[in-house]
Length: 239
Image (tube, rainbow, N blue to C red; front, side, top):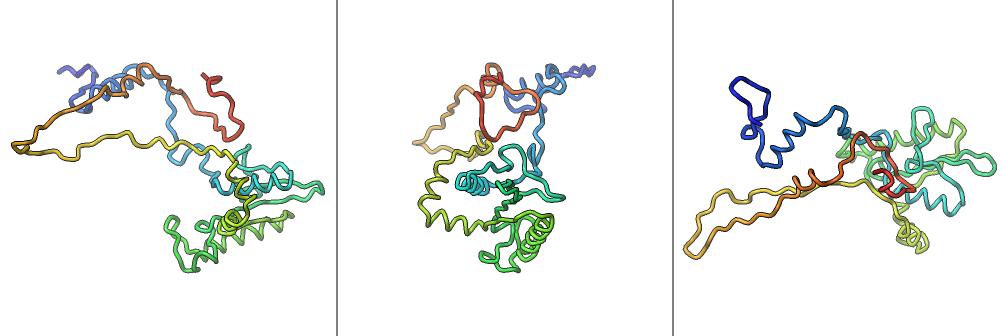
């Protein structure tokens, strides 16, 4: 495992590893892992250009249910693109009218009810006035292309949910699956040095680490995934 004085290309676990599990993982990665096996997830996710909120999908599904229409959106294929713009939802009614649905998150679109025009969005550093202007420019452009533009502000939708029991029941009935957030599981030392008093004793307690156990016996996906957001099949079919 370790490098020799002649430089045989081995690994020095005392130089780069903290645990036995990390040492074994290092050997596997450098000596046995085949190329193009484990997909590296892009920093912004697999579909960074399609940013949508759960609330937007809730509203679109409510419109779909009440009007009895199928609406194209990010969760059932892809958002419709109109020139340089992506829209939250799109459908054609029985008269052939092309209808665009846009859900305006107040923080992201500069809601004039919730924010003053000089308030700065802390994420993109734009003023709410600029964000609102961008939203209206998009609206005007889409309408000029012959589409009917229907929108709702986040605060308006929240008000409908609070005041309309039927809408609330419908929203509560939805089962919208969100991406996993695999965080946590790490441990750390909270005190690196301690002198025990006469009535104290210092004890060490450990359990079998799950990392090597899972690495040896668990199933790990290879390659890059197919992104599925609705109508999930049995996951065991992909094993």
